[in-house]
Length: 151
Image (cartoon, rainbow, N blue to C red):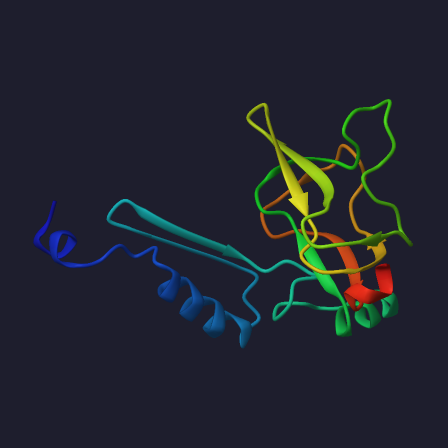
C-alpha cells in the first residue's frame, strides 16, 4: 500500500457517496464511475427515483409528487409472486403496510424480499414478473395513507 492509502479513510463511505449524489443531481450526467486504490464508486441516475427523476409520461410525473417509490435493493431477477402457481404479492389497487412483501429479487440463487415502507395503495407496478432489475430501479409506486384507513 502506498502512504496515501494507509492514511486516508475508505473512499466508499456514506458521506462521500451523498456528496457525489448531491453534486451530480445538478448536472446532466447519467452515469459516474470513480476507481482509486482498489475502491470503486459507480452511480447511475434512474428515472423514477426521488431527486433524480425525469418524468417521461404525465402519469409518472403525477405519481412522483405524492407517492412512495419502492426501489430494487439489489440487482437481480424480479418476481411478483412466491411461485409461478401462486398469486402476485400485490396488484395495482391493493393496500399495503410497512414490512409487507411486494416482490422478490433473486441474486445468485438467493431470494431477497422487497417490502413496502409505508401504509398505502399500490398505484403502479413498474416492472414485469421475471424481469431483470438493477439496484435502485423503481419497482412499485405507493400512495401513502394513514394506518387507520386500513383497519
